[in-house]
Length: 265
Image (cartoon, rainbow, N blue to C red):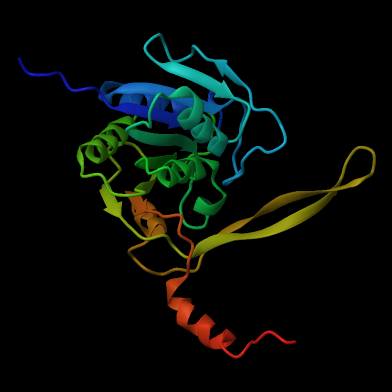
């Protein structure tokens, strides 16, 4: 008699909160692929990056919004806290994969640094859990996710079936287009693009100054192999990312720069 294989355990989180339509679409997309555990923030945590909670309690509360087949918890901490506490206190062993999202809005180019969605995925990779962060280029709370679930299911399925690579993490961005308009998937590099930011000075009803972050997105990268270029041309962009921030090409230059510095005395 053939032994039944154990279904993969899929840890799901996000940064838009456990109540966001995006995470519910993500659960629906991967539900057929394995046993799902959700640990997600109890409030929006966009732009939190890789922040963790120190000096304050983290609280967990059961959440029943995904149906009886999904074990879910809302967490008072950051997206990275959610991954950490899931691995340390909720799951009996590391999950097979961690998927984060679906983020309401883009996480291409420099956004990957600030994104709570991607930081949660990167944290899973730090724990050597294969991970994927998903984002849809639509910031609206009532964004239509129906056309992206098929692509998400196929990408997650492919990673689950693949050879396990150490610290594997993908950043996936999906155009806010109809299923028919999406041309396919492109594996890309991260574009050299960023927001040119400014702080608008304003006054509150009491006449006191406050500042509001604003700005516009500028692409300095004319390459055709970037995530920004792929998305502009209606392709899903997939960028393998890493948490090793060493700038290797600058290593020899820095050695020469500092080789004549000696301790005095």
